[in-house]
Structure formats: C-alpha cells, structure tokens
Length: 93
Image 1: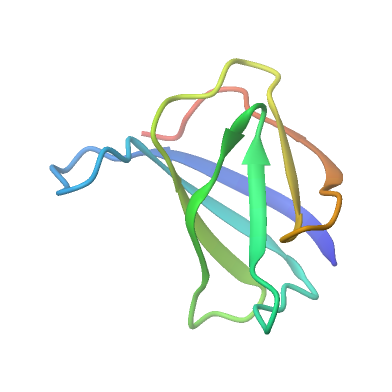
Image 2: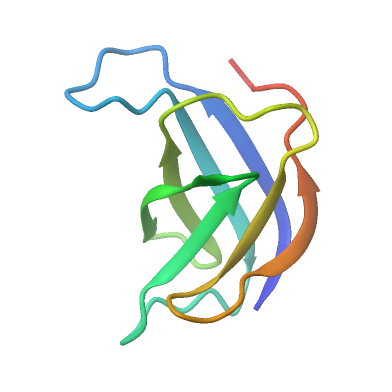
C-alpha cells in the first residue's frame, strides 16, 4: 500500500451524521477486501472508510477537525497502521 496524498475537506452541507470533514486518500494498493481497511488522523479514527469508483482513491470522514500536524496512518484491521508522512495542515473549504 502506497499513499501519495490526502485532501482534508470541510463538509459545509447538513448531514444526518456528526461528520464535519471528508478525507480523500490517494494512492495505490488500496484494497478493500476480507480484512477491513482502517485509518486514523492523529488519535481520531477515520469513519466510513470506503473505496470510490475511481481507482486509487479511498474516502472517509472525521467527526472533528484534527490538530495541525496530526498524521494520517492507514492499514488493515488488527494490524499496525503504517505512517504516511501526510499531516493535517489546513482544510480545503
């Protein structure tokens, strides 16, 4: 699994969830299979993590804005998450 970039986008429309940000993860080898893919930004789990119809893109949601410098880590359930070196800076509105 290789993560190339991630976009952090503020959700500006009303949703029936408590999600406030969308995380769009770009990379290769992002396989959603028998073992659930998981991600965290800092101490916060990325919720609703799912592949999109575009190859190499995974989408997830956050319930609060991360702190500046919080790192995106990704992997598979019950396995150590890998460091991506991608950190939260400022959201794209």
